[in-house]
Image (cartoon, rainbow, N blue to C red; front, top):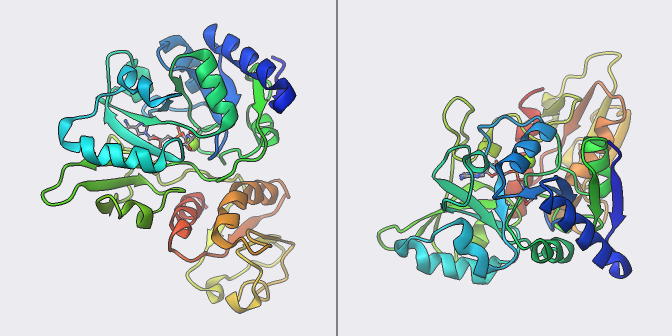
Length: 342
Ligand code: TXA
Ligand code: MG
């Protein structure tokens, strides 16, 4: 299959919306930009279209998809909001929607079992990406979209990265430029709680724990493994993994290179004080935050840098940890998962 790329700039935004909506309406699967990562979209109400998403991604059917709505008015089509969490839900969506926050809610009948892997809940998000919103409105139905990578691999943050992952498997990639956040959305589940609502973070992401704390008590879910019905299967230990082994150490001295092997360094800021840049004669060094953007810049660049190092034919990649605070928690989450299969 030939994969077309349409750049959704101002002058051909209409063409991109029309082409994507038409394909979605025919039960096809298309790659679309969001503010977090590129998604592989399908009509969320069409089981055959959703089945194609699983097939194209080579994704096991126990891993449910996120459903994207174009407007809060459409929420009732896909989910219900129980009375006891309605207040916190409303506050969260007025603070973070449209945006990189996904909320798990009881699902409606319109959502096929395949989307939720048989769970009685559905993960819902309203993307704030101009192009994604345009296509959502043009298509007029909820869009189920996981990240547009093959299962267990690095999420794409550009149209070129989608092409590398899924070129030849899908008819269309809508190019909306580089993703603003670069990390997948924060996923939460809400509970009434006794004094304050409880916000369970199932996957850390661009909306940080600190930001959520304004709305309730935040509990970060522990890692869950594949053999249970995973609460957020993005929590599978090995996820977001490059093909090249990725190593992470508590301190730089723990790195014991094997002779003749070529190691690349994924550094945070290439700060010599961190102890990594001078620890070895690296075959390649890439910085997550070469500018002054710090953690936000590192988040945006993470999957791109991981992919660059992965394509360099190294024997292993050593990842320097970033600070485990704020957005750093989501970055460290992705790094630990990438490292867990080394
Ligand atoms: O930023 C994002 O969230 C991107 C863009 C495309 O929206 N999407 C994304 O989708 O990261 P995906 O499929 O790669 O990750 C979705 C995660 C999975 O780990 C899945 O386990 C979790 O959402 N999930 C989906 N439905 C769920 C549910 N009912 N309960 C708990 N977790 C759920
Ligand atoms: Mg994913």
